[in-house]
Image 1 (cartoon, rainbow, N blue to C red):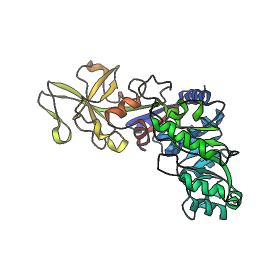
Image 2: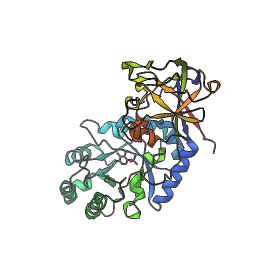
Image 3: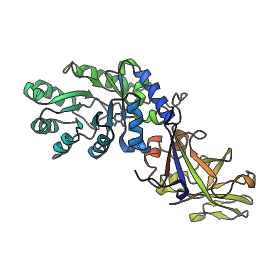
Image 4: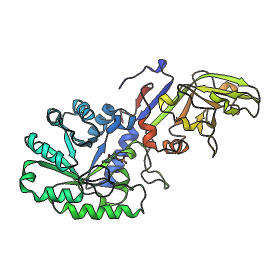
Length: 371
Ligand SMILES: *Cc1c(COP(=O)(O)O)cnc(C)c1O
């Protein structure tokens, strides 16, 4: 991941590795005696895969899930001894790459299983079967067919049986129990193979959902795995944007493209150095119908005003004493004072999207690695 020195960056992503470790321990304790694996796809949800992977490995994590084979290869260079599963499954012609990097595909169909059987020379893989999310995976019928074919089963080394929940973040959603029943039913076909079912929110659904290995993702990075209730996770990521310039505008002056915000009084405006190219959703612009999105600066929350543009955005700092904000002052977009979930909510999205869209124009700072 590219890095930009702090003095050359207009914005800073701070990743608190002590909080990450603490979250890993919290989730591991919840999942025990199941092992706690981690989803580290998408640069560890935008935090930086190499750093995050090393920290989690040092905490005792042995099983890692990425989306793409290239991510797996990058992770392999960082962790020579980890078990690495690739959730994409297998496109035709990829087996050699998997073998070379000792990656395990989560196979999603009979076609994939056949190709793996033919070319994998006994290398391990996972079988991903669909219990109701209807995204990737063997249908239960296909899975039964695979299990009934003794030769096929003998010719692939299945190290993990997995499925994925559609609605785990809604504790009372009937889909959870329905998917669990399908999983339990079909798992009987391969009773000796370790099983994995729960993502972050699934871990919170209780021991029935844990099986042998859980796949923690977004909660590691600070997201609340049970939205609506108190968040047991510590915030890990803070996004700070530097003030580029402050300016005074007269009542009636407008800010930014399309002049969408008109100053209701003489105002002081801070221009901040990140925009939608940096993953700041344009939906945070001040035209939101249910009140303005906010940033946290000089100890308080202030509204975002005008349109978020490609490289910058604006906040109304009229109510903050002039001396407290100047060029280079940091405004928090999310972090300890505004949760990622809250900021994502203003943009009509979820923390996953906000984190994974951060882009590469930030200085990334990792703190808390000594603890
Ligand atoms: C991303 C992913 C996870 C982790 O999900 P979170 O909701 O981030 O905890 C687990 N399993 C699969 C198959 C995934 O794609």
